View (tube, rainbow, N blue to C red):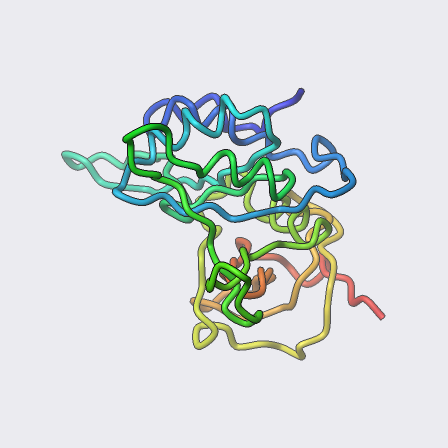
Length: 213
């Protein structure tokens, strides 16, 4: 299956991330009883978590982004996880349970990211956070570009224009839907994963924004 443009460059962060990010929304096919779960890595064992997920035969996504750093006076673009220690997997609850189950004496290094807005389950914990399929594909579109200007934002950083939903109709963020906001002095489109995060695109000119009625 096809890869996102920068996946081959992930080796300076996590070699296995190549198998975790396709970045092309058409690669993800909706399947019965499958949901998008968010898995959290404990003990900072990201590399090990990569190994576990990449061998689990599930559709998965780990958003990466470029960070520009200065090293010895030179600017360098480095690819890093956009949401450190978080992985997205599209699978059944049973298969997700199998991924996070501890093996033998080893402690489990993956846990569900929980939805604290939902009532407790029989095990006394909140259920795992699940992301609707369309919302996840929109998030993938917003976060799988080459732009180093994609960023995670807090609500207080977003100065919304109207709050109406819009679609980007051209450029590298074409097809992304969200809300127009002014962030760090630039017009961007904000995509929200309820209960998890908000991500802002790079600058989007007005002529590439279409309001959704």
